[in-house]
Length: 132
View (cartoon, rainbow, N blue to C red):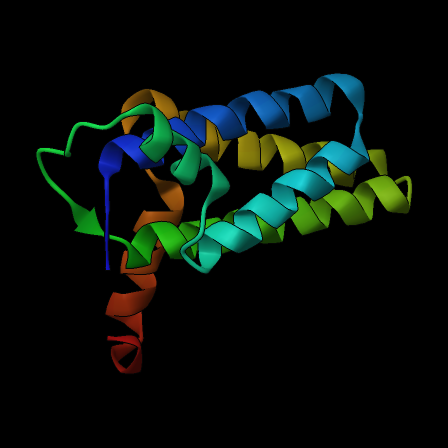
C-alpha cells in the first residue's frame, strides 16, 4: 500500500490545528475526536487524507510506503489516549504533556516533512528482525 506524501503533510497540518485547539481550550472531547482520527489512520482510513483527496485532484509525483505513516498514526493514538487519561483523571501535566508531544510531532511533519513516528518504525524494524 502506498500513500501520497502531500496528503500525509496535509493531515499533519490539520492535526496541528486540532491539537493546538485542545491545548488552548482544554477540550478533552476534541482530543477524543483526534484519537479516533489517529485510530482510523492507523488502519489506513485517515479522514484528513480523504478530505485531501477530495480537494486535490492532481496525481502525486511520487508515492511512499504507507506502513511507516500508519505506524506513526498508532503512535499518535497512544499519545492522544495518554492525554485523554490525563484529562479524565485531572492530571493536568499528563494531559498537556502528551498532547503537546503529539502536537510537536505533527508540527515537524507538517512543516518539515519529518515524521518522527515513521523514523521510530524504521528503528524498530532494524532492531527486530522478525518485524521485517
